[in-house]
Length: 83
View 1 (tube, rainbow, N blue to C red):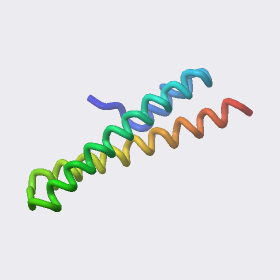
View 2 (tube, rainbow, N blue to C red; view 1 turned 180 degrees about the vertical axis):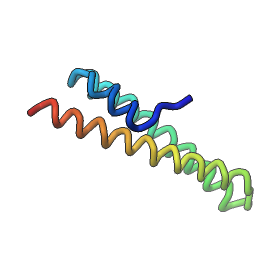
View 3 (cartoon, rainbow, N blue to C red; view 1 turned 45 degrees about the vertical axis):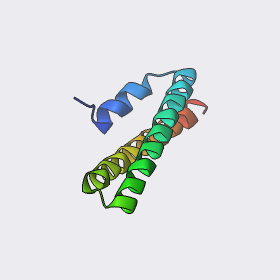
View 4 (cartoon, rainbow, N blue to C red; view 1 turned 30 degrees about the horizontal axis):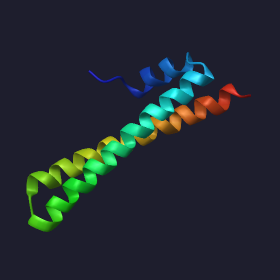
């Protein structure tokens, strides 16, 4: 089961600045992997009309959106820790 945004916010509020930056790096890699996978699936859909590839591309796009939001929260939390 994935955690809710509130649970994620609570968890990262306990992190040190170094932990926040490490988590950002981890999510950055996840973002890159999802982008690469989405691009491959999108090409399959575009070039051959593979409907399953279109569904997988949309799945990766949703994951990119979710990861991007998590990165935004981590950046905000890291910024607030510096105050």
